[in-house]
Length: 273
Image 1: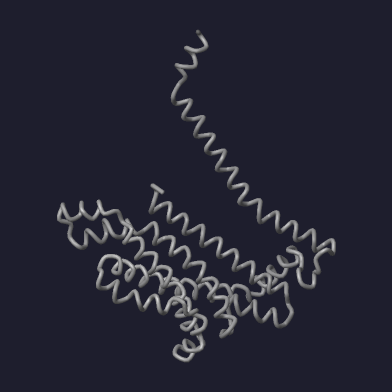
Image 2: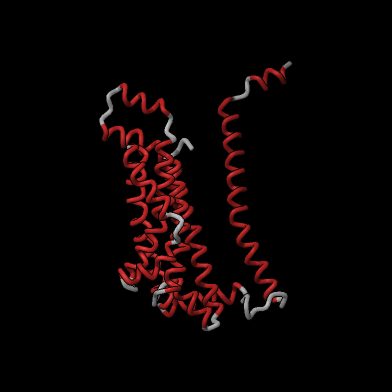
């Protein structure tokens, strides 16, 4: 009986602390797994290359790639390629996201705009932006502007489609409440439409950043004199595979980094999810 009384009178604060520690332990375990998987792949790659199982002519060990990267950083070559590519990625990403969000919101809110724009979006979306690159180069030259336009075109479509879908999927009850309380168009836009569409819209933006990285590599391979894609292509043609892998790993790193940044933004903007 005494043990049962002690158990029943256990401090709720102590129980809450124990549950919090358990949640923290699970989060640390998940983070450890996230870090362990790429480290495991790199160690396995190093081992297979060093033992001769993998041909180092085509798969140089990660340690050799790291040394090449350090040399390129020291010479200043790498910083130039990274800086140019990041500028093109961010400029093209913003140039695609901003009109995509605005037009997507208008399509979701107003039926005439949706019926007018939707056929154009559906007709142009299947055309790969890279297939239009020759026309884009003719119109905008081979400089940064053509790369920015190419990325913007690739990013625009997933953002506009997801944003419009997010608005159309808002629960009807929120629309009725806004009407009943006489919300203005501005209030409806910023209080109902934008927050309601944001979960799906952010997924479209997340997809857009991945497409932006894919596009910049291909665009810089086809018509550029600098950038990470240019580095990958020229290194491949010269059979400088260590430099080629430096470019590939950098693209992978930036993709992972941008994804984490957008996920962090999503947690800030949508804490209930």
